[in-house]
Length: 78
Image 1 (spheres, rainbow, N blue to C red):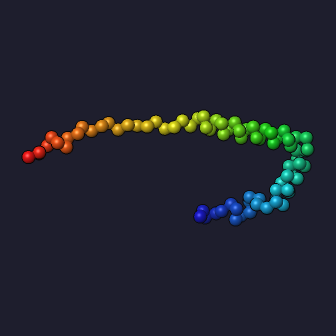
Image 2: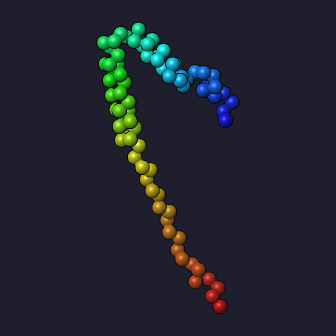
Image 3: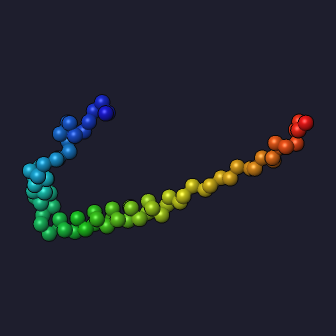
């Protein structure tokens, strides 16, 4: 476990009451008409980010090691 856990500090809301309070504050800050547009923009940006992260990460190239010559039967076969 990390020396400092964010959940233990109470910085991440875990219950329903905290989420309701956050939504009420957002409603007061942005108003009821801008919240759907804000949520739509946030959803679109997350979707584009996921798409871009999948496209930019090609699989790593497979490197083949050079084959060593088979010398097992050529030395000291008495």
